[in-house]
Amino acid sequence: MFNRVTKLISELRALPPLEVNLRCAETAGNDPFFERIVRKFYRDAMRRHRKFPLVRNYQYGVTACHLTHDFNDYFKSIESAARRNYKKSLRLGYSFDRIDYNNHLDDITTILRSTRVRQGRPMPAALFTRETVASNDPPSTSALHDYPYFGILRDGHLYAFASCLIAGELCSIETIYGHADHQADGIVPMMIIDMAEWVIKHHPDVKYYSYGTYFGATETMQRFKRKFGFMPHRARWILGD
Figure 1 (cartoon, rainbow, N blue to C red):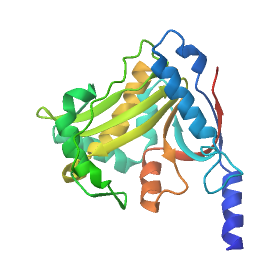
Figure 2 (figure 1 turned 90 degrees about the vertical axis):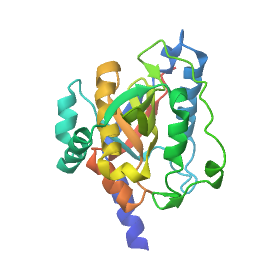
Figure 3 (figure 1 turned 90 degrees about the horizontal axis):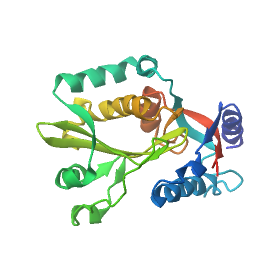
Figure 4 (figure 1 turned 135 degrees about the vertical axis):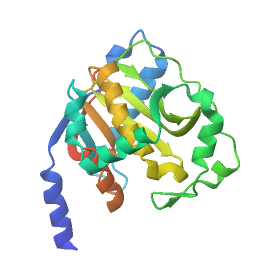
């Protein structure tokens, strides 16, 4: 036990540093919704960890990859298996786009109900009895802060959807779901890769593309994150207010 703890502490200390400015002050002039969600993210990041109160919640193990202004840099940096998954989904006729969440509520419900277990954990029982609630998020007037939804589509139907928080230098994947019967088609890899390209094109101030935390995730999920370049870091968060 002592050796495992010592090894973990050494690994945490060796994590590469990451400093992210959320640029909260620059939400001024945008809908107040965006200041609220940026401040909420910052509070969540800075609160004490539930199991390890000596550290912050998103301090050690935040997974991120550095984005340049050239999508090819990202595409070449991910594992070859990820690129093969992406090309497979293209061959099968899937496409990516930003979506209006409320135009796809039926398909979103179908996706969420397509399996009762995700990442080894049971989905909430209420999900299978209640309808998907429409979003009332306002549109953003700035490329610095946004909360876009994206979809993977084919033949007029949605097969995967995701949401991202755009906050200054950060793009954080907040939710991502694929239809269980179509996962083998590469729909989630397509989503992750095409979101990176979208962010590079439409949010040039974003430096870091993030997907949750590393430690505490299953080995399978850790492996999946590494496949797309999401490596653990030691993060310092700047609200920028």
